Structure formats: C-alpha cells, structure tokens
Image (cartoon, rainbow, N blue to C red; front, top):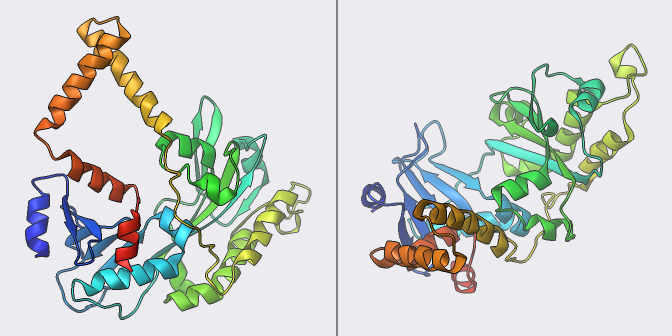
Length: 334
C-alpha cells in the first residue's frame, strides 16, 4: 500500500489519505535517503519509514516533530498519537532514540544584539562563526559549523516569524500580543554530541537535559566582559547569567508546557498583502489601472485555475502541512 501511494504521489503534489478513525495525512513522494523510502506527513509530524520490517543497524522509522506540536502539546502527546497512527499500519514503538535535539530560550531585547557586541564578549570552544545581516542589522549569529555535533544560533525571532508568516502562534506561547524584539538563543545538538552525554533514550534526555544546558551555556560558550586577560576569569554578562539559569526550568516532565490548540497561524492579513502584491503585478501585465476591474480579472482567472482541480483536497493537504488539526480529527486520532 505504501509503495503504491508513493508512486501516486510522484504524479501529484502529495496524496491525501486517512486511517480508519478518519485521521487525515499525506503520502509524499520524497523519502529520506538512504534508509527511509516512505514519507508520511501528519499535522503534528513527518514520519519516514524504511522498507524493512525490523530495525537493522539503524531505526526503521524516523520521526521529525513540528515545532508547534512540541510547544503546544508536548512530546508525550505526540508519541501517544504516533503510537496510534503506527497501529493502523501494523507497527509498534519498540524504542526511541533522539537523533537531534534543539534547546532554546527566548528574550525580549529592546535594543537588539549587534555583531560587534557578540564578537567582543564571546568566549567559546568553537572557533567558526557565521552571521546574517540585513541592511547592516544583525538577524542571525552562528557559532559552530552547520555539520558540527553542536551549534549555537542566536537570532531575531520576530523577523523570522514575519518573514515566514507561519509562527505567529508564538505570541500565545509568550503570553503577549507584541512579538517585536524577541531574540532566541538556540542550541542544535546532533547524535554524536548526545552520545557523548550518554543520551540514548528519551529517559536519558529528561534526566540530563538540565546538565547539558549548564555545560553548553557555561563551558561550551558564554558571553563575558573583557575584564581579564584569562578568558575563564572574565565576568559573565548579567544577561548571559539569565540564559544559564534558564536550565533550571527543565524538569522531569520534559521541560515543556502543554497548550491547547490555537488558530494563531499567519493572520489572514499576511496572505492578503501577498495577494495584493500579485494583483498589482497582474494589473500591470494586462495594462489595467482600475482596482475593481483588476480584482475581477484575477478572481475569474483564479476560478478558472481551480475549476478542473480538487480545491477541497488541496485545502485539506495544506491544513495538514500547517499543522491545523480539526476538532473531528483531534478526537478521532485518540
């Protein structure tokens, strides 16, 4: 069945399917080479499956959880949902092994961060740094190479949210209506780093996550005043002390809060602004300078575009890709 759906997905932009509980998901043509041939997308996660029935050398299933599902529902909920989804394919979860873990803390920094500030105060084991500026304003700062076992990313979360238009729900997580000037300190840890800390299961992760944060923010990197010739004796910046203390927030429950479902994806106005830009371009192409006429022409063309396509199915697939879970789906899945 999976192979047949994969073949069908190669001819379309994903194939919509549902399990006996009417929980919808998408079969995608892409896999995850070299081990995972099949790719299923559920509202909460992407699931990659190999062609082998049993794990041989590496896991025969790879789970990539959406950040929104982690922040709002927590990993225990996601794993419980996965277990039910796998059941409909005749599968079970025998063991779990983290292959990548991202840990972060968010701060509102009214004046923002600058490249000279970070370069002047950084004391780190990793020597490689990269950054992204827009109009000479820092947006992202990396410490460590992209393929390194651990990498730090400090970035303007507000700008990322507005650029992508898909994570406005963070306003609910932060309990604010104003997401401006929020910066994120994020560590990306891969399997070799996790193995060094003896993290081979989720239980290991919950037990050691606070210690890992303490190591990363205390030994691996810190921001310090240049007040001593020996870097280890330099005074830690007060803000970075807060970053270090954030590790105390992790607990045995997994360090995440559980939130109810929210509709805080990109606001409709965000899409309207994009369509408005397209409207002006279409009007210019057709030499139309009347707004009402341009709207009618664009609307007629859009209706013609979808007349011979399955609009309802496409909306359902995009809802899954956005992580939108209808009330019926959420109840049916559990």
